[in-house]
Image (cartoon, rainbow, N blue to C red; front, side):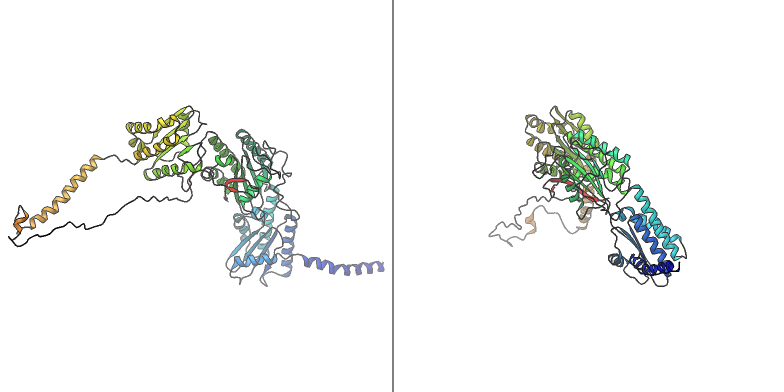
Amino acid sequence: MKRVFSILLVALLLILPVLSAQADDRPTYVFVDDGLLTVDELGDLNTRAFMIRLDRGVGVYYFYYSDVQDLPSYIEQFAAEHVAEENALVLGFNADYYYFLQIGPVAKAALPDSVCEGTILEAYRAVKGDPKGKLLAYLNTTDEILKEYRNTYGYASETQSVSSDPYDLSDVPEGIARTDGGKPTLVDRAHLLTDSEAASLSKLLKEIGSEYRCDVIVATVPGLGGKTAEAYADDFFDYNGYGYGAVPDANGTTINGDGILLLLSMEARDFAISTSGSAIKAFTDYGIQCCLEPAFLPYLRNNAYGEGFNAFAYECENMLQAARDGIPYDSRHIYVDTWTDAQLLEYNDRAAAVAREHNIGIYFLKSDAIDNAETYLESFRYDRVSEPGSILLVSGPNGYSLRVFGNSAKTKFSEKKLAELQNAVIPYLESGDIDTAVRNYLSVGEKIASWRPVNWFTFFIAIVAGLLFGFIPVSGMKRQLISVNKKTSAETYMEPSSFTVTQNSDVLLGKNISRSVHVVRTESSGGGGRGGSSGGFHGGSSTHSSSSGGTHGGHSGKF
């Protein structure tokens, strides 16, 4: 028996160095000034932080150094030296301030500033006079938030890659609806939606895409892998084979198919909209930034992702219908469906100048997709005209409609003036000379819009005021001329034979000046909402090329 006990004692003595080495290999999570916590208290807190790392895959760090001056810079340096995890939260204090630093996509998504400076900081500050208790409150509260986030959204463990191959769609659940080309309409890798929300949204996206022959896609990812949101969205679209009607090239990549993709990255709350094919014309720069984004971004900024994605889908449907009707949502006042952006630019700049100077919108809209010009004019006016006064001419294969709206426009475009405009435009419109019709429409319309009616009452008041202000001072000066007699001719002021003119000539005291009009085009930045001003938009869509060689439009930003 004694022999067995001796053997066990020797074995234990041999194992102790190994256990000590394992304990020493654990990372340290709590760093404080000397004397603030005992060795045992530090050991308990570091053990708690280590368990959080094992359970949640997130390192939770804390330090308090009273003499630290530049706290944010120090935390960045601290993280570089001490943080080993891919995802981590660091809370640092000096004598006066605190600072949170989130590292990695999971920490940034689960522990945003609002949560850190709200729930976590409140729990920490609620404990008074107990340093260990304060840190346990910080660790335990963070653990609960990570646990809830993981149960709600799920995220990869430390041993797994947080961002999977963006071009491998095998992880998409079976319940997600597919495009007509067999691709998932929703890829929710950031796990922002419940299963029922995801299934309902994907079905809606599928229905819209099939109806308008244009893929409508939503994708969410934890991070961008070093790419910009624009580049990631373009590549996700191309390399995954999205786009209605796209045909694979020699490398198997489908490019320039018809579609629109909304991408969300949770790491830094980036979003990007990528358009391709016919969607580039349907979703213009103005349409995306002034109609589409205002429809869904407010929801995303409040973390209402389901509502935001549904708002995106429904607004896409509205804009695709407008494109099907022949007049996409745009800043343009002049639109002819067969003209290029370059042809439209000159006319739209003139129409925009009239709107700025006279607050009257001059619209000329021609499309072969318009069945009923009168009906289309009414809906366009209510939905997309911002000026208080406007004149609209809508032309389709079955005829045209010309209407004036608003008192300011009706005052200028009287029946006589409107007949003058029709005579200058309609014969050319009916004969198919659209260029002359548009040119005359703008010229005559601009002339009428710039006309200012005479206010006879104001004119009379001005004449009377002029006479009074002229008569009174002149009469006063005349009364002061008491030593001067009135003479009837200049000769009476001359002495006879005192002045003889022997030579005369005309000398022009001045110079000739040639004047020319110099037109300067000015632009303002940004744009208004739907029905708002066109701002810095000149119509159409700006485009760029993706790494696959595809052509894309769209816009990106933060949410």
